[in-house]
Image (cartoon, rainbow, N blue to C red; front, side, top):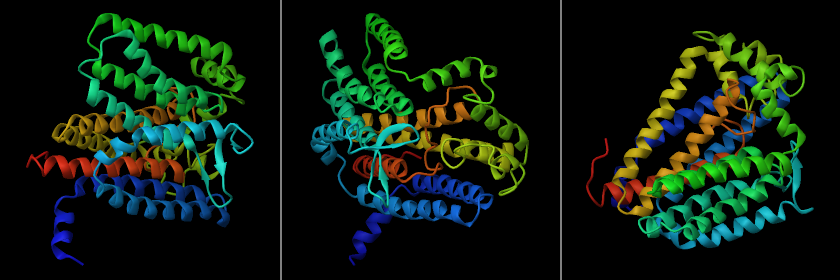
Length: 375
């Protein structure tokens, strides 16, 4: 092995960012292991699968980190069209229904959500558009075209239905819009668009159970044993943790199976109950460090594409964190959004790790090509 290349690799890798990701991932593994303790030996399969996915994902990070991120700009549109095709195919008999959503391709030994692939390539093409035309976009027709790029996959995802992922795609478009908005009428336009989409979705898209979740969010007492049960049990678990928590494997809500989907949607509630306020503060601190690091990498990017790419990656992670924790605390409707690096699930973990790999390459090309210190 070329020792010069190896030295260069270690020197140009953002180990601080990797340390943050590793800490969050280990926290997630501990929580998944804890949930398995109360569910019998068979449940440890999920822990082992997540561990394998985590190892694979870190390998993928270092591979992506050594591929020039500008290559993704060249293949972004092809990837977007392929993702769009897969979102169409998953609605046919080729797709599988899991947890009421026809959004999976089931290959037996693993399942794959094409919306995760769409998240990656939507970020790439939006960053490409903003980097090329962001300073010249001012016409209504241009804004409509950008909107269609996001709303085409968003509509397909709503048909599955997967309300949570559709929200993420929408927020990616919204963030892109706000990054280039220059005039007041454009802000008014976005507000009218949001209101129109919400009204249309309520009457023609949302399923009854999705409406129940929103109604229950407004008034949890409407159906405490039905649609409001998840949120109620989650809030109880969070409150039961108090300052230091009950200890890993000793949370009554998680160990006695009161918290549904405790390894995925409500894993934050498990952590809050078993590690308490102190554990929650640790997690939020590391997420804050992650966003700060991404902000600094964006500022040191060598071109606008790298800048917007990093910012949109931060937006994706931020809204995943915000929505997941919000629904666990009863502040937002339950939408099935995973907590990045922590929730169980291979597809989403791999998606996030690919995006982190992209930021590592942006760091490598930006910081060291310009000798810019971001610490």
